[in-house]
Length: 206
Image (cartoon, rainbow, N blue to C red; front, side, top):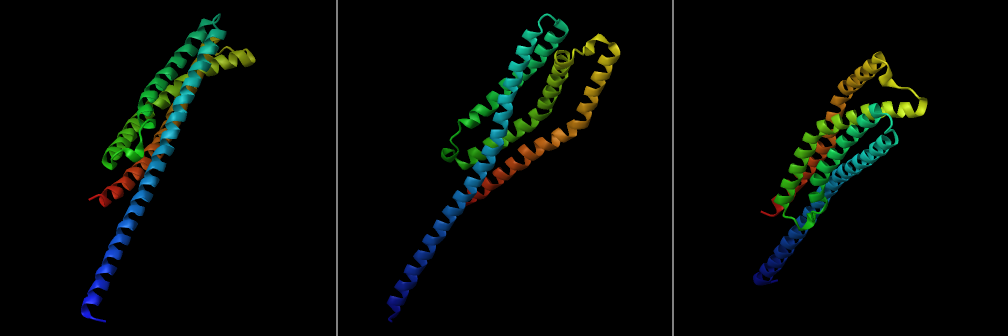
């Protein structure tokens, strides 16, 4: 074999290696992108579910308030709890709609990374308010349910009312750290992982 033929073979071999390298990089890029999108969509689905449940809770409170309209102590507090849920629904509707309508595969990686980080920050920040709204909603609806189920009026006795709201405060204090940890795990860790995968994808584009 002449030297020129060997050089041609080496040149062809080098081109094939370069082609395989580009193919592997493209496959790895797509794999990381798919993983990042899956992580993001999983967390987004949790937010959408929570948003929809907030609207259902609002409807439940509204219906119960109407049913108990002859007892304003219950109907007014229950409806106020429902309004808190409606406020939560409206906030999360705005926060999630722009992401559910986002075409992730047509969005530049850096823009997608920025969107995921923005969603993480807003969701974690909303966590303490979500917990407070759920606590208020439960605090208002439980007395009404007790009244309907066993004809027990908590508000009738100042002692019972005081003990009930003391129990609510203890419930909040005990579960608040757990709520923070849950939001950090769902939104912080998972979305940080998705952003990290996108960071690896962006390296292949340079």
